[in-house]
Length: 201
Image 1 (cartoon, rainbow, N blue to C red):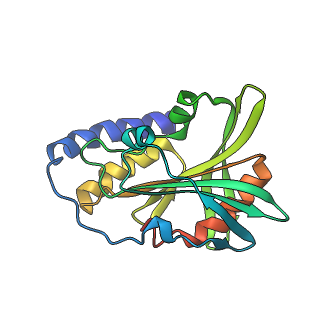
Image 2 (image 1 turned 90 degrees about the vertical axis):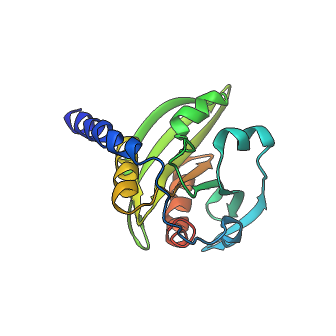
């Protein structure tokens, strides 16, 4: 609680500086189009892209995204959503799944933070179990961009402000994986993480 309060205080303090510089232009950063994300991720194979409807896009206001299903004969299935924002200075900020999922009828049953071992290093991520009526799903998500991956919503906001001030960058993305069970979601998270660097620089 103390650490969370300290981060929140720093975010509020830095927010004052950030707001005074809100009109400053971000430094352009090239990134690969998310539609080019490979269909073959280790033993996972893509099963099709699902375009978001106009209403969802108007809420998310992403600059680029991929919404795709993958299957693995040994591991099952996983649904991947990656949303990229070229700039978050003018109110187009990443929506936390903990806020969005209840809005679409999915209620959180449990939540935790974990460290997953990926091929390119440790990945701190959030895990949620959500349910709607009799359906239950596992969710793994994290924030990625500007050279780091972050699990905490508070830390993500802090680094967004800090990087906007010192790097003139507020780009970033959200990686969300939904699967029937947590082992499936974790397995796909470990597999996809090493591929994301050029898409979420």
